[in-house]
Amino acid sequence: MRLPGLFQCGVLTWALIASSLTAGAPTSQPAASSDPADLEKLGQVFEFLRSRNARDYAVSGPNAPNAIEESRFIELGGIPQWVTIRGEDRRNPVLLVLHGGPGDATSPWGWAVLRTWCSAFTVVQWDQRGTGRTLSRNGPPPAATLNLDQLTHDGVELVEQLRTLLQTNKVIALGHSFGSILGGRIAKARPDLLLALVGTGQVADSQRNYAVAYQGLLAKAERLRDVRALAELRDVGPPPYADGRGFGVQRKWSNLFEGADVFLSSTLGLALMAPGATLRDANAWLDGQGISAEALVPETSRLSAEALAGEFKIPVIVIQGAEDFTTPTSLAAEFVRRLRAPSKTFVTIDGGHFAVFMHPDRFLQELKPRVMNLK
Figure (cartoon, rainbow, N blue to C red):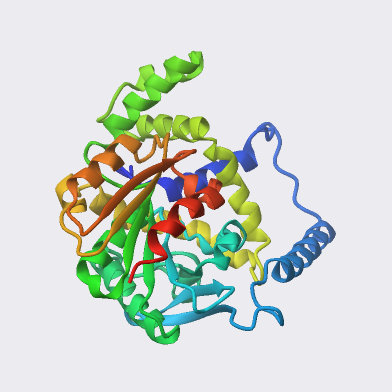
């Protein structure tokens, strides 16, 4: 089945990793099976690294009496769903990270990438229904339950429970890519539960997204005089596409131009070395990206610019990579201009679609002054 339109970031992660593992492998001979002793040795290395990372990336300890570091399943929408809560001071505002993909959970690698954020926020990561450890625990969700309405309901329940668990009303939702859609829906459904909505890799117009991204990629290739990029982009032409090849070419060059291919490959290594992780967890993370995309991409691709923007009753902040060729920066700026809210902010930082994770400290510099004094 071809996944239409937008938000194949999660599937891309899996495809990129798979292609990198097979790149250059000989095709004329069958692959040799691994020696059990080699696998055992590799397993020992991973266990050492997981133990080391648990120690080095810890936020709690005798010098942090107000810290919180918890990982647990929380009942949401009738099923247990995986949530991690980490912060150096539980009195700090809560930052709920809504991952993209759909299905591309951040928790397998966010323990490292977002570690510095734990000094300013209590950082909550959630493996949404159908992905990550939530998928591993429950298995693939019934098709009738994997949709935007159900995920929104799950997200509202989570915020309600976080407010009680952490005894605070200072909860900020931060949505990346697909998560920016989900964050917007949660904010519209229950604005009373949130201080602010923050978007990055902001989804602004599902129906125009690929056409605008194509023109941006072509212009970038022309500026760089990249002969190969120009040839491939001109060969597939602008969307709409009859099959997945055109989308694949766009996604290839958006990630190469943004430098995201290196970042996405690194997430697999971090997932395998995550404190307390297992190979089963990594497999569930990868499997969830395909499962979630199959169910959710057709729905998200139909969303209009008007439905995504509209009216918000809380402040809206979009911090976007300056050269985002996946969810184009120009459309994100239009999104902010179009929406109605008590206050709204649009700012760019270096990077592309994954700027929030590739430049987390720079992102934090822009985020903190805009949310810390909200009441």
